[in-house]
Image (tube, rainbow, N blue to C red; front, side, top):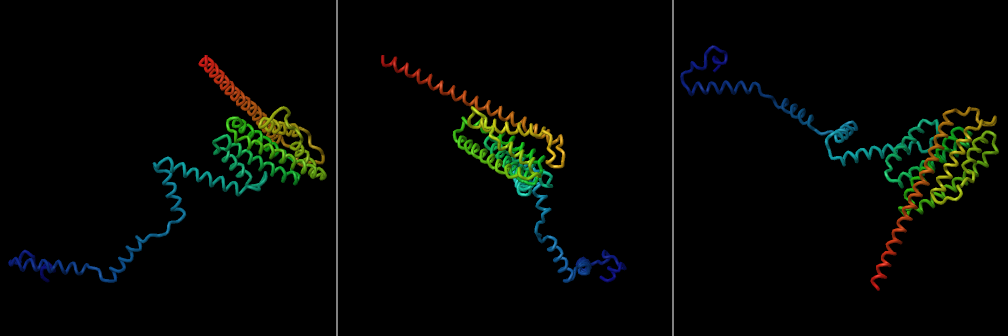
Length: 324
């Protein structure tokens, strides 16, 4: 066997077949035994393999990758809608919380406006849009109070004009539902009461700020909101929309008036006048829509009443002929 391993003798030269096979097996066993691993090498290899397949906790990056893969795959549309809706809701909630108390020229104010626009975009029904617009109007009015108190008359003028425009838009949305949904009447009554309450609050604040020369111009702007400009001869949302449009137009006229020497040292820019004028135009268009929608609803209700009257009269004639 040793001579065969050293190559001095060929294995085929062994004449006895059994001996030749025994030598071949012995040589193979020795070769395998020399190439085998010892116990330490086997333990080290086992630990390395088990360590590579041991699970680890997923990181934030792993979760993000899985989320984007789920959205990108041809999954059911319901899953995509849920994912996009959750992302939009998170964005709106973050923008609302982050910029709730911000004012114009603050870093987060643009984020606050973007969140409001997104909320308005996601509102599908007229009632939902009216609710969002009323919420936006509340924010603009709170900003007007803070800006007027600090003497920022230009910014007060812009947010006050936006407040009036949003009130008119909300009233126009509710005008479509006034005759179609009786339960909306209570919401309109609440809007009317809230609108009058806000104007009364502006009247009180305007009187308070008029005593300070630094805030006298801002007090004049708030006085425009508080002025008794309720539209005569109208009821419900028509009166609210017309009143809000009148306030927006008065503010646009007020923006064209030259500033007094006691006003803020910053000159009124053409950008401010343009924004106030555009808000007044949108408020007037909303008031016209409210009148048109209310008129259509009343005509539809009148036609339905006429149809019911005609049917009742027709049935009465039939009954008369049957009795004869």
